[in-house]
Length: 182
Image 1 (cartoon, rainbow, N blue to C red):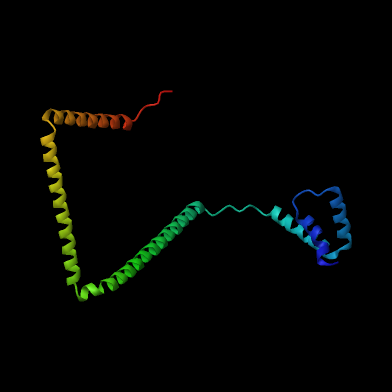
Image 2 (image 1 turned 30 degrees about the vertical axis):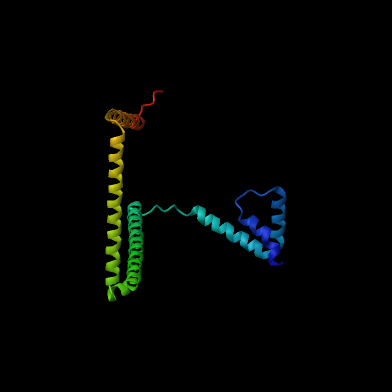
């Protein structure tokens, strides 16, 4: 018989599920006529008998401790490998960034005066802007102090102080942990 004709019978021989009555009859009929399947069946029965008759071997003493130690060692090796990969990748990135920064800084190293003068100019502009803003705010406050009477200043100060106090109290109340009573 061809190999594909043996397939359901071989599956039935090795199956641990009980066969139906029809499958059992078909298998027995096939075994009567097929020498290779009959030899396979007898060999499998012999193997099953040997497996069932073999004594159960217990692991050597200290197996679980050795296994746990090996597991911990493997875990430590994996951790070291990961650390090495992360550090080497980080080092490579630092080298590449340093290389590109060195290439970008090459004109600065050859002639740094334009960069120094530009930096001084920028800081001078920033400081003069701050000075101009401070002068403008001072003039506005002097003008307001002449226009607004002192009693209104006291009222504004009290109102702003009260709002600030209310804000602090609200924050404190909202941020406190509350117990939930069931």
